[in-house]
Amino acid sequence: MTVRRVVPNIQSEAAQESREFYGLLGFEEVMNHGWIMTLASPSVPTAQISVMTSDKTAPVTPDMSVEVDDVDAAYAVMRENGAEIVHPLQDEEWGVRRFFVRDPSGRVINVLGHR
Image: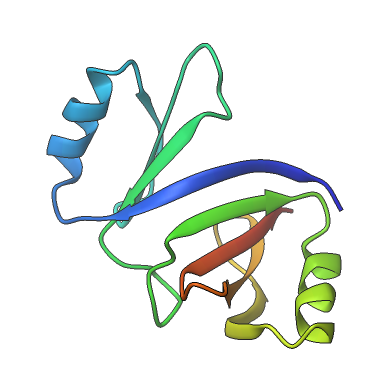
């Protein structure tokens, strides 16, 4: 399994203000679904920040997203090792397959792969 990118998720109702603030650091909007907006560096596109009001299909808002090349393998490893699955593995309408897992410090991690 290979990690493709790691994105901090900031829960906020101030999407426009966040877009402007992070724009001062060179980030540009690359995705906006209304409830989640992702900003990326034009020179290093995998350097990203997501701002979300709340997660559309999950019971909690994740603290971080980790994109992997094989989300099914990641899910199996987490389950085999007794990790707390917060949101089950599922396909989402916006083109990702994902699950949420809680890390040892209590952070919720969105582990995903693009379909």
